[in-house]
Length: 199
Length: 199
Image (cartoon, rainbow over all chains, first blue to last red; front, side, top):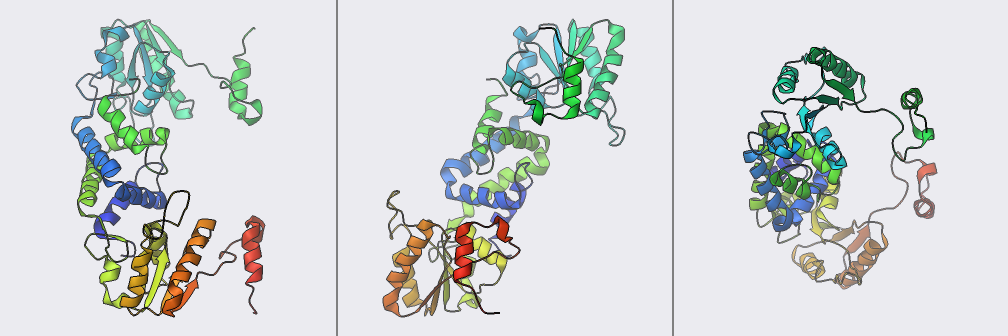
């Protein structure tokens, strides 16, 4: 042992496994926690215990919530006939921050991947097809990441939904708002040029 | 509420107050925690509660430990007659990782600062003077940061220790091992040149 007592070392090791923290920043974070015991350490431990006890997956869409149905699925206001399909909860939150989509979501929990043996069942795709039937859905918006896996998954879902005769759309690709051409990759510029619009 | 249930929002807000995490990385970390509930979230909550209950400041040197005297102050092997003075516990840990110093420490908990009203009492400087008398100390090594505040504090401590007739030294300044001159600041190059040594 070169740094501190076992308890503190254990906490540092666990903190270092969080995304965005390495061993060095975990040490700094733990020292900060010890310094601010009543202001930060105890509230954080309590908040974690609360979330560990209450957080659960929405049975309908896979979003994170504290009851069987998440707030979005439970809200009558969100019954717009539109479902937005996202890869994970972080993407759902990003969509919600934009505040522009008023329908419900379907969280896949990943993308199809032969390499990682992720099939349609693992991604709740049969459940999505069932929802489209049951919830009187008129449009499914595929908001998957613009990666190869994301696009493969999007095409597979579009195929599955085709017999149902609803609109299946995907997010537009192009130059980000505020983006400078000089800093954009070739793929984005190509996509933006192909999808050019009349002014 | 645009992102999730209150409990989860609260946890994100607390996580975002850790050094090295912002609002966005705190969200990612919390989603990871929820995904790895039994592997990460519950162990982390438990480890925090343990540290909150056990961590305390060493009454002798200010290091973090789990008993009245920290492991270093309690160890007879570290009674070398040398005290290394550091600004905070992170610096003590950095010294211990280097594994080269075998004496004991004195953690100031900051630097003298007229602006923030930090005086000698707040930094345990009288306690350091008492320790030098009581522990048969022969050398005090000032390992303070090479900042203006750090160096001011070093000079003040050197003055306080002068009447005791012991050796007061400070870490050498110069080119870091593996450092390239091209990337070094002027101050470091100046210090390294002034302190040049015969080969």
